[in-house]
Length: 207
Image 1 (tube, one colour):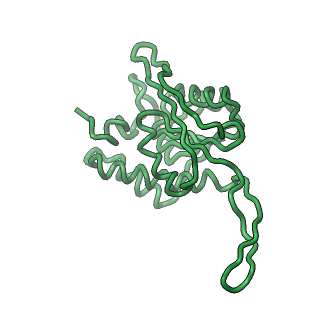
Image 2 (cartoon, rainbow, N blue to C red):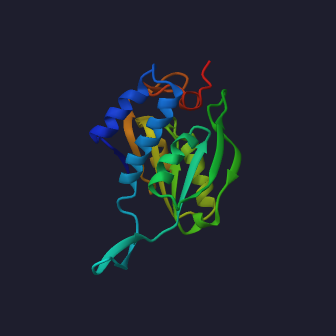
């Protein structure tokens, strides 16, 4: 299952983050803001429990989140989305998956993994600005499931049908939330029209 979030505020920010004239400071701010909107939608059906809260006037019946949240950015670009989720859910724990794409095979290669123990009974949220071929996302989901993760959600800023198809074929139980399903991948496996290289644009390392 995948869902494109078409809220006007998301689409307005997406237009600005796509712009090649947007510098790394604003790019980071927009990545954070878009992620907050996407996370808000992605967690709308999360498990909650009833609690009683004493207000200054009376007792109120309320709801609290009833699962551990573990946010897992795919290094390095996923780190640019992390603050957006932590601002929304500051008690979330954070794990990391380090993957890079082999330039010849175009396949993901893992070089780092670090997860808190709560992945085994919590809700894991994988974040990466670009879900392109889908290979890195599948590898990250594989790694989490090997650690016993049950509920996994993927949040990306832009993706394409090719990447979605690969992830959904490998892991049909994992929902994907995005701001845009773009047209295609080019010969170098970059999303078109996309954002360019999200990592370079986030961290100001473009040449």
